[in-house]
Length: 128
Image (cartoon, rainbow, N blue to C red; front, top):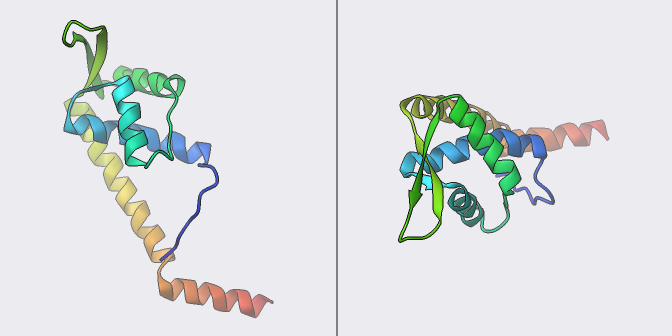
């Protein structure tokens, strides 16, 4: 198994990962921006913190693509919050993205298998 101790998450990897994370959260239930940020932070054990300035433009683009719908809701007389809901189009997009993620993840798993790790070590020794 391959273990990675992250110093900093690659920005391109993060950008490509945010949309499916949002879709997965909204697949379970409607949510508002700050709650989405909190769910990602909690699921990452506090290691991944999404700034509001990063999240809201992504939500807006997803809404423009009709993956999400939004509505304002006031809970218990508090401040109104904009809640996001996954649409059928968003569900289809989530299914496609998860299929692609699973495909890539399987390739990475195969490349990181003990057999491949042994071959890579042998190649390194041969090169030295």
